[in-house]
Image 1 (cartoon, rainbow, N blue to C red):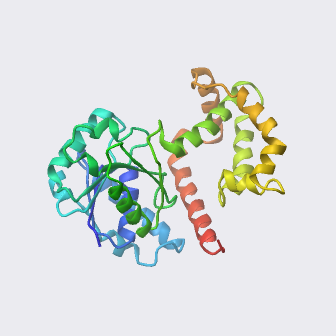
Image 2 (cartoon, rainbow, N blue to C red; image 1 turned 90 degrees about the vertical axis):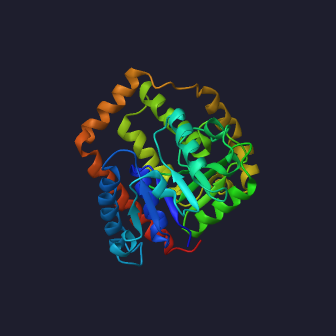
Image 3 (cartoon, one colour; image 1 turned 30 degrees about the vertical axis):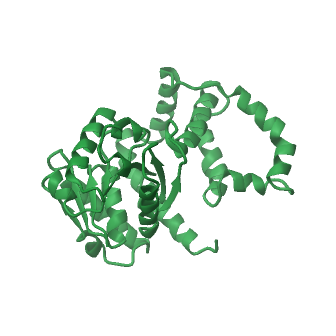
Length: 309
């Protein structure tokens, strides 16, 4: 089993540690903030207990947690690692600094991957001697429950590195998808941005309430989308498949997109949506509700595993 280095011990770093450790890998976690890794390990223990209760791990939680260690330094974290998963703040200058250190510390055979949600690898790896082994491996939060990982290389990333990373992600139970070129925000965020922007516009324009817009997704689109993507969905929404769907509904759907101008998150609309959400969920209860979300995701995953493909 490959040894994995997790650099940055926030929510995503801890979740990655779970992903790799439950698949049998030895994991070392490091964070520049004193005490951050220890705090993350406490959360990891809670999440592993939840996974065991949901029947989503076959080992005892303590056995999985035992594969995760805290490193005192970055040097100790990456020593002997074959794959590094970086999870630092979304600031390009910090990523340049971190990847420069990683490139200097790690042998040329070590893959250097970033969990960044939107900074392309070309923005922080161009000047590195080992830039060909760098890429983005962008997960969905939390990756130990939502398995998709977007693999996005820079123009100079070695295709063999992407293939190797894809194989690793498949071995640890993730669902990797590969982008053929860099785009702003990658693919998942672009899809999400379109839906979220329209949700804000509908509230801004007085079309529907915040709560009812959420219901349109969780009790409507989301039910289908938990089992199939948009192309498969429309393929089944007309007797003749995608071509028939486009012939029947292309005019309507295309006309709708013409009305969907960019949404720039104006302060008034954001405040309106935030007030509606705080009326439903106090800010101090967000963490508790996130735990509820994760347990619901566990139940959904357990159900999907029991269904034929």
